[in-house]
Amino acid sequence: VQTCALPISAGARMVELLGHQRGEVKVSSAWGLNQLRLEEHLPAMLEHAQSIWDGFQSKQLNGLTRGMTLHQAFLFNAFGDQRYQPAKPLMRKYVPKNFEIGADARIAAVWALGMLHENDPETGLAAALDGRIKDNGQFPELEGVRNMAAVSLGRMKSQPNLETLYQFADEGLAGDRKST
Image (cartoon, rainbow, N blue to C red):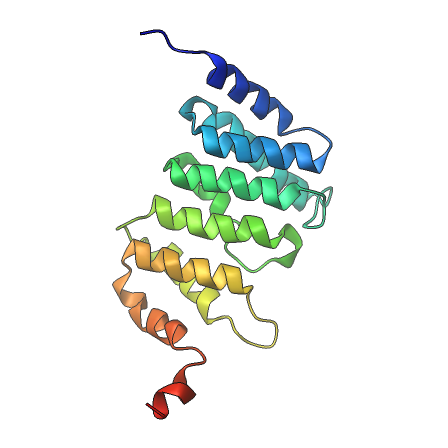
C-alpha cells in the first residue's frame, strides 16, 4: 500500500502560512490544519499560537487585528480535538475576561480545555470556568464564553459546580416555570 505525501507537505505549507500578513490566509491555513489533524504539526501550531498571545501582550496585536482571533480559535479547536496537552497553559490564559484578545479565541480555548480535561475536573480550572458562567453583572462575560464554560464543566464532570450549571440552565426560565 502506497501512501500519498500530499497531506504532510500541504500541512507543512499551511503551518508556514499561519504567519502570512493577510488575515484570510491565516484563517484558511488554521482551518485547514484543524481539518487535516496531523499530529506532527501540533508543536509548530502551538508555537505560532504562543506568538499571537505574545503579540497581544506587547499590544502589537489586538482582538480587532484582521483574522487574528478566528485563526487562533481554529488552532485551539485543533488542540482540543487532538487532546494536545502541551497547549493547556496557553489556553488557560484565555479563560479570564479580557475583551482585547477577541471572542473567538476565548470561546475556543474554553471549549478545548474541557476536551483536555474530560472526566478530570481540575479544581483550579473548574473554579475559573464557574466564575465565567456566573459573570453576568453590569459588564457580563461573553455569552459564548459562558456557554462553553458550561459545556466544559459538564464534560469535566465537575460535581462541585453542578449548582452553577443548574442555575445557568435555568436563566430566563423562572417566570415560565411558575405558570406550568
